[in-house]
Image (cartoon, rainbow, N blue to C red; front, side):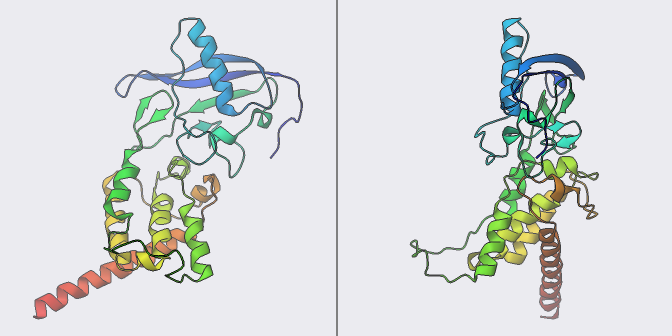
Length: 266
């Protein structure tokens, strides 16, 4: 994972995007982070900087966080131009300061995408993801009482593929890293993880149609399979899921055309 490996403290220069609100002008501000331990997480380092700012009567840097265990997806930010920072398969809260060296300059910015407007400083509005999920990222088939866990057999290859896709934490790194600001990796992960399971089959094709349509409505860019999304993804979700989503979308479109044709013939 790189870094200095030293136990000595570091002094760092932080260039941080500050923006008081959605409609307020923003600008980069420079701060000094002193006596930073290499064992600190990146967010712990920001906590220390915020304590110093608060003691001076200045507004602390606003940033999203919750679990600090790499599973909630809320800690996203661009660090030196990389989503979540320099370590692969790592969220910002799991990034440690040993990834940097004494004297380094670190530029910290919010996600940059039209669909993720800035709320304040490093906090962005990712409710567009919620609306994509609401469009079809669920199973709504009436199943009655809960069945035993092993009552519905699932082939291991399908179960593994579903779990790989379900690892998506909705952080938005894929959108921030994509030159087109596409949400195809996120959307395809949600489409794919249900599409691999028996419970997700009744709505499989309608799900792809609805979620892709909502994704387009949210001002995300188009996917050109550039591949930067899977490189930035902290859960290493493959763009293979995009190919599967595209197949389901094409199938759903053909099925819809066939339904219209049959309705017209009748």
